[in-house]
Amino acid sequence: EVIIINDCSTDGSNKICKSFTKKYNFVRLINLKKNKGAGHCRDIGIRIAAGDYISFVDSDDRLLNGSIGNILNHIKNFYGKEVFILRYVDSIIKKASDLNIDKNFNFSLKQNKENKSLVDYIKNFDLFLPTCWLYVVKKKFLHLNNINFKNIRLFEDLPFVSQILCLTKSFKFIEKPSYVYNRSRTNNLSFIVGYMAVISDIKSIERIGLFINKKKKFFNKSKIKFLFSILRMLIQIILANILVCKLNEIKKVSKYLYKYNLIFLKLSNF
Image 1 (tube, rainbow, N blue to C red):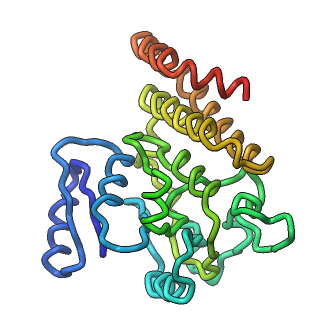
Image 2: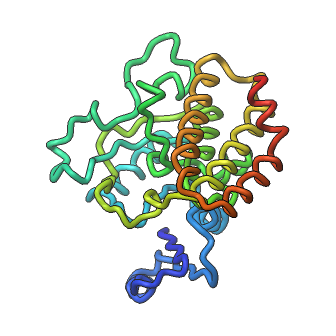
């Protein structure tokens, strides 16, 4: 099943999407009446998906040929795993065969006694790429743990991925590259700066703060270290973007900070 969420596009995408729904009966198109942002769109997709597992593809990325078949084979052979982790190819590289796997992979495949959770496999927290498209997730796992994107417009992946990595108990790496990450385009959501980026990050910090407050007694040192690396990343983005905000926008930001003040204080103490 392919679900396309058209978030009020203005470039003719809707016409292209409609042609796919006519050609393939497994393609569903959802047209939003008002632009809601990536987080809202992903939550709609999760809610209406009929399948047992969910995977994401950003609008400017693509999958390698044969990826879906390979993923489905892994699900069939390891059914019940909560999360499958994909490898990706950088858009700069023309062929998957030219890929240096270790360079473009967040995780180490070396197993040892200390690897008790998925977080323990992360090579470097500071260089970690927290994107939701790296994971194929069991829908029931998301539902039972109340994991969603909560209508966060930008950087919505960070709290979502953080919860998945900290809570999953059963996972499997899919070693053959599946995903093509397009980092060269500058007209996508990742390059939006200013007020929207600051507000989105504050909401993300609040989400992670609530998560830590609720689950902290179950976290080991590596999970705490990982979550704080994500928070550091969010704070750095805020500091960079607050500089280009206008005075009235900074006043609005202050209201958000005041609204979530208790959560931030708990994080500071923690």
